[in-house]
Image (cartoon, rainbow, N blue to C red; front, side, top):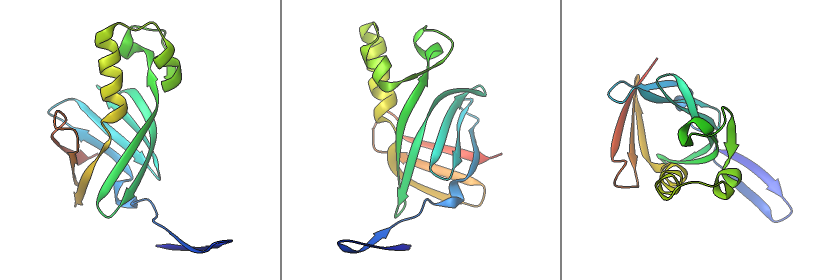
Length: 133
């Protein structure tokens, strides 16, 4: 725990759980995460599809997606901000996919040795298991 003194007094800030740092593969889905000190990337078949930031606190993770690759929506070969995608001309099924991508990243997690398990809050996401590369 880090102790910070500010105008209002003492503020406690939880550091990022460094045990998450590294590349984590979900071999069942050919996907995974790269976590690095509060920044994450999500990949499918080793192709980065999403990136953003994350925080951890008491066994909980909150991932905030900041950019999604256009290939996920048949758009240009580049990353788009969430704002750009929300204002793009997407079909209704694509908007549903975008909403799920944005909202997926909350849940509890555990790291035991080289295994990461994330228990996502969104029921459709369920529980995912990863192995450290």
